[in-house]
Length: 427
Image 1: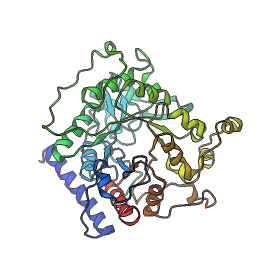
Image 2: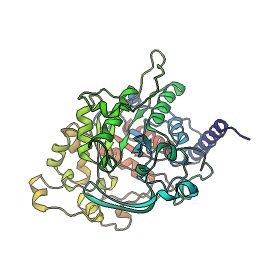
Image 3: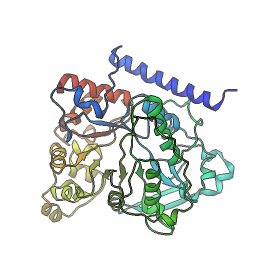
């Protein structure tokens, strides 16, 4: 019988081999050049069109979900081995107050929860407001209804809708806590010998704060945990007394001369984003935006720039433009309000306008080549003046705009395209 550790190592090695074979198919046997944000200025002759002048930062979206079940231990290891600059977790909150890592508020899509009879009574329906939009989910198991012990019974699976992703790593890995994620990234820093950024997203804060002792319970719990692991300095005191039950493991000191990578917060909830910005001195905030029309105006950028160091819109805002994308989401707006804020910024100018306000840009999500790119222009060619036809065209277009960060899947592919652009265009 294989041990869990041996199975894990085998999984990582096999997935690494899959990635390497893909690279060899696409790019031949040319060796990888390990380029990180810290050394980017040494890798190019004339610089990039980013706010820093360095190459764009690649964020491993939910780890490396192109090969491994998302947010699993192996997904994070795979992202590190493939050279991600940041490794992303999504945060949720259990009934008994534990921060765990999962993208959705529910667990049916990506775990084996349906196969565990003792948890069947927790299947239910919920409706909540998320940034003014009503979300309704039926016949699901929700993290906020489960204890950590119940969540730990589950095993992570690839979403079956994406059949091209390897399915043979299903049921090997448990759902992680936020603390376990931070421990993994600290250990990766030591084991691989380079820093990795952490960029937690707080999912649906109002949903998770509902029923708690005060309305910033979720945010403060995350702040205290990130601070304990030395990725955040608390600048405005939080409600520590409400978190006396938060028991975190003692830190293992890093080797002399080794430093942690950078950190950043993310949230679609702009109230939460502003709160996180005010309470952590050294952690920039990523304002995730998708359905708020005012954001895509000069006045909107002025407002966001007061607390957000990075703005992260859905990538099609840079191709089809704000009006077309918002209509596709069935979002309406007050034309007079938008006019008073300076009107919608054109897709090709949005990054430059953000840079003018000393704000970075991080579009999401750049999928693995097996997955459709999901641009509106692929259904209607009249939407936008440019429509990417392949992965290279997509990446080169965004590089030319000067985007600073990119949420990517298949990190090897993204890194090679970044290197190719640097060699062909920047250098």
